[in-house]
Image 1 (cartoon, helix red, strand yellow):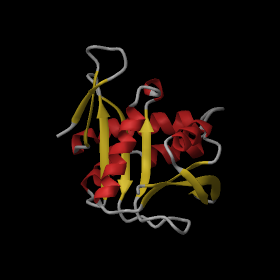
Image 2 (tube, rainbow, N blue to C red):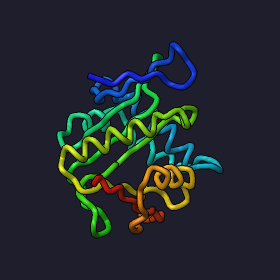
Image 3 (cartoon, rainbow, N blue to C red):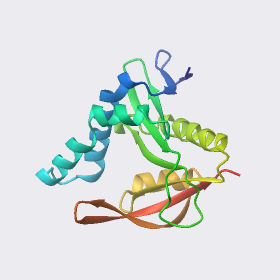
Image 4 (cartoon, helix red, strand yellow):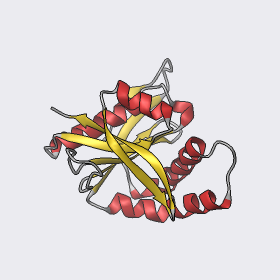
Length: 183
């Protein structure tokens, strides 16, 4: 069962938050590819990153995550389809001390829907999930150069608590670690 909310100034546009279903896997994979490429590859797509994205964000891998009881995935759906999702991993060791084992592993909203409240609603649903697990905090890592995401997390009350690296084969990319205290 989901939560329906009116979005923006549109009387017919309804946004519903609901748990992901296996039938959502291809939509979630497509959003993942769209957001990942648009966020991290600004000067062109080379084979190295294309291969990574096409191997990482497949409907089969997403179906596996949806079926995994340690993964909690909530989607935002409007009248035309899914426009964002958040995935929380319940047993994820943080790369820095002081964080719970509850991680926001993936959090993507289609860029054309930024600023509509979808991200905030998905994030608050994740906070509720973590509270139900009796976590003291919830954490995430984001690319250190992703200024829009960093500004969003800080505006939502996250604290910068450390750094880690995102690795693809032999390459490492600096990520900031943020925690939100649920108290």
